[in-house]
Image: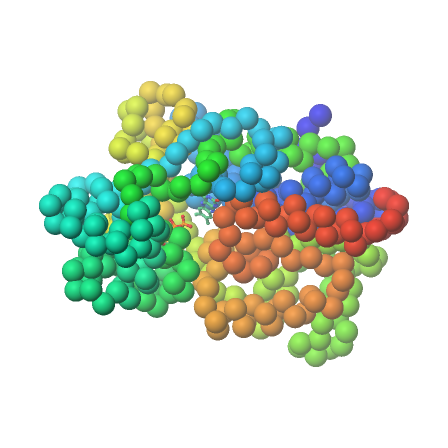
Length: 415
Ligand code: FAD
Ligand code: UDP
């Protein structure tokens, strides 16, 4: 067996029970669950020429397995999610480490007690660490906002160092704004660690799919009742009907091949795209990736180096550390963050979280609430900053919700 790729024009929509837009973890997990648990015939519509969403990886010309949409390291504390994904792949234990390049000197990120030694020298660092541990406890995770809110002048020195050397320039490059201007939940993803744990993530389960993410997705979607249309945009095949001609009139039906589709429609793309940006584009940040291959075992000292005080790229990742691949060559990838201005040429990677953008998003979302068989799901459709594990968790829950909503309806009768 293999994934069944079909041309949308050849799809008999009467035989389809559920439609899923997007084949990242959000779309693929729901598709798998509906097909597997309820024997539903699922049609996946994917605009890219491959499955896997942002997790897509492939071998480059040098034979190195590289990620095409940003470096993806799996980490979770959710045992159910990890066990679920183990059904589709073996996993390599991998603990991601990140170093900040401070003008050629490497310092662990998140900023931790080892970073403190480097920043202040062992004696002063010991004193500062003691004060911080007294206040927050050993092993605590202290966010940048918490750190900067302290009234102690000595700890303010730590806060200033971390702000200036870890967050300020990197955040300006990544978001086009200072850490004070962006939502605090974003920098809170990388808290100061009151420990000597040099790992980027502290989750219980961390690793990489043994043969890569694309192979994992191929296994997940390898069922006779899942069909995938690649290179197909939802906007081009969905015929949207609205309750009235008003701009804010809610969605009343979605037609496919000229017929109203009444089965579940799980949509994992950006909502503004679906509605042809009628209320204006939702703001996102995009990225450019630049790859370089070297005749060397390794180029970097660890999986990722963050450029927190210099360079115009944010970080460089060397894939061989992540994947454990052995080769006399190596490929690295530089990430450049960009404003998202051209939906035809760019990919919306990061929702820009703030109250104004949330309200903008909710206006789109309100258009869909009226359609009971329409389910927005995922990092794009929900306009959120979700990691992979959270998406898998939400997708498993969404599949159950859909299955329950389908009730006793016999498979094959929904479409
Ligand atoms: P996506 O993976 O974006 O999938 C959405 C799919 O829908 C895409 O394939 C897209 O082509 C398709 N689509 C969109 N619109 C349409 C349309 N109109 N018609 C048809 N198809 C459409 N998470 C981690 O846990 N660990 C990490 O190390 C990590 N690193 C990351 C690095 C970067 C640079 C980025 C941007 C994200 C990272 N993430 C990481 C987060 C991870 O990428 C997301 O959690 C995950 O991609 C969410 O899955 P999804 O299915 O919601 O979205
Ligand atoms: N960040 C930073 N310096 C770093 C690492 C992170 O300023 O060395 C900030 C930056 O604003 C970034 C956010 O923390 O966008 C979240 O970092 P994370 O590594 O989680 O970002 P992602 O991997 O999702 O791009």
